[in-house]
Structure formats: structure tokens, C-alpha cells
Length: 494
Image (cartoon, rainbow, N blue to C red; front, side, top):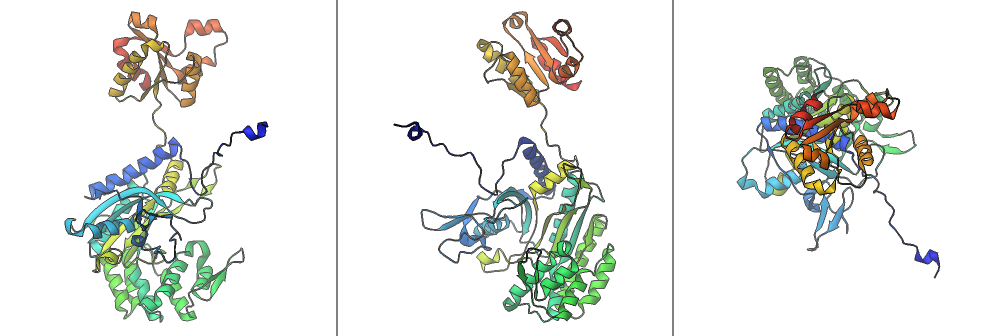
């Protein structure tokens, strides 16, 4: 039999497209960001919730199954009871299902926060992944603009909680009812018949910062051809409607009061538009009373959010700080999160109106930006490592580690293979600060040796010979076994 036929077929080590492995630095940064957000939500009286990764496909709402396999936009599979399940694509649809399923037992409003992976079955690209983490807070059963004002304030508080100063961020708020009023006056019906056209208008305006007024005007009209030659159908508004919509997007400024007066005139006799102005006035009253001035929150009529389910106030949290990439080039991050009022999602299950409002941000992108600014610590404290001289002393090594851990000192015992030289090389690769050295002789004397690896490496640069090394024993000290915790603390503090 030939060697070729005997060759073992091994799988190729590779990860699926659009998914990423995350290092400890990335995970630590993301965890600290989520913890900061959770602390804000908890102070406001919100409660944590965890919904499952899978939901029944028909409960997701955005991707209702319309063929034999409902996999458009989601990752779906058929359960053993022949029902299609799909990985959640956000936290809002599962929340709507949870509230509808437990409506009678939940306090109203029900206020919850949640973070976790969401999945999109879409073509991956640079910075565009099929799995990513979102962090959400929502109030369900909360009518009125006061709940929206609280969400806006929490969005600003999260920015402050992660160390951003005023001037480094801005929360920009608007109201969908204002745009509804403009479109209503422009002949676009506020009914199911005009739903698709309205959604196209929203998506067009949402590209304003990327395409500019001219590009958006094309999308509001007949359509636009991009640089690749691909053509996007437009919303088919006439010239006067395009002018009105673009005029609306520039109707705001940094003074919230002045913006409200401008909008009141602009909305004219539109009842929907005037209702939007009234809601923004209440939000402004609450923001002003709580000292959320225009250095933190402004009204910006260019903010519409591209999703069709928003029904009232909408807002986005934006990073304004100077951020540079790894090569020192400036990077514009822009919006890191957003939200608004969505009064129709829970009613899909209930058959009755259930008001709701929420805020969500993507964890990875936000955490990376904060890490580049040095605001989110993305490294753990260097561990202390106990070297293994004598495997018969393994119980003692773990006992020492337990004592150090009880004193809140991050500690590991080397459990790999190799002599002390290899162990110290491993410690260096791990970024270990201190190594604890104890063998049978030290045990008999009741002593331990503690070596500062970082300081020792620096001092060793000036040592020329082995004799100098042995005589100086750079950056290490001997301590009584009983005093090991105090000795390690002292060396960590140096």
C-alpha cells in the first residue's frame, strides 16, 4: 500500500468567514465597557435579562419566513418539531417576545438591560462581521416622551461612565413624527400604501453624512449610481418634496430652544409634525432640568435612524474625540449607538398597543475606539507565577497560590513541562511580574525567593559576566514563607 493512501486526512484549521477570534486584550476592553454601561442602567433602576440565542423565526419580525428555508438575513435551522428557529439578529425582537409571553406577570413599565452576541447572515466585509455584541436598555409599557428623555440621558451617562469628557461626545436627538409631517405635506401617505416609499426616504437621509446632500437628493428622487456602477432605486419624490426633506434635515442648530421654534413654524398645520414638536419640548424640559445642556445633547433633524419600526423620538450617540489608528492616522468613528421609540413591536404578539423605547450600542467598535484613546484598560494585571522546582511539592505550590489569591493577587502555578529556565521564559511571554521560587531546601528553611522579572530583565542589560549575575542576583529577594503575601504585595507596589 502506498504512503499516499496511508496519509491521514486532517481538517484545515480555519474559521468561518465573517467571524472573529478575540484576544484577551479585546475581551477585557469589551467587558469593562459593558460593565460601565450596566452600572448606569442599574442606577436608573433597570433589571438585567438574558434571552436565548435562538428564537422561532416567525417571532423575529424583520425576517419572516416566506419560503421553505427562512435564511434571508438570519442563520436558521429546523427544530425536531419541524419549526424553524433562527439565531437572534438583535435584542429587541427577543425582548418583544419575552414581554408578550410574560405580560401579565411583569411590572409595567418593564425596564431591562442586556448584552450578548447577535448574528446576521449577510456578506461579510472589512469591519463587518456576522457575529457581534450589542448592549441594550429598553423600557416597555412606557408611554410619553419622559421615557425617551431618560433613554437619551442614559446614553449620555454611558459616554461619561467610560471616561469621555464633554466635547468628546454628543447625543443627537430627533423625532420621526417631524419627518412624517414633512412627507405628509409632500404627498407621501402615512399608511401602509406609502410604507415602502417612507422607508426609502429614511434610508436615504441616513446616508447624509456619507453621500452628502447631492447624493441623498438623488436617492430621494429617481435613484443613484455609485462608483462601482451599481444603481440604487430612489424614493421617487418630486422636486418640491426633495427640497422640503433636505430643508428639514438642516433645520436644527446647537440651541435646542431655537431649533424647536424653527420646527414649530416648519411643521405648519401638520398634526403629526406638531405632535413631534410637543414631544421634543417635553424632552428639552427634562434635559434642561437635569443639566444636560447642548454640550451633551442637541436636537438634530438629520438623525432619522434607518430602521422602519421607530415611531417617535430617535437619537444617536456620537464620538467627537480625536482618534488615531495604529499608524497614527486620524479615524472618524461617528455614531457608536442609537435608539428611539418603537411602539409596534410588542403589539405584533399582543394585538394591542404596547409603547416601548430603547437604546443600543455595538460593543466591539465602541470598545476599540475607547482603547485607542486609553480610556478602557484592555490588559489584566500581570500575574504572579509560582515556579515548580519539585513536583512532590505541588500541593505546597497550590497552597501558596491560594493564599495569594485570597489576598486578591492574580496568581498561577506553572503546570506545563520544562525546567526552571523554560518556566521563566514562559513567564516572560505571559508578562508575569513576579516569579516565586521554592524548592526542598527553601522549604526546610521556611523561605521563598521572589524574583521581579521585569526589573531583573532591565538590570540584566548592564551585567557582563556570569560572576556578576551570581553575585548580584538582580531584582530578587528572600522572604519568610509565612510572610509571602506581604512580601509579594511590597514588590508589586514598587
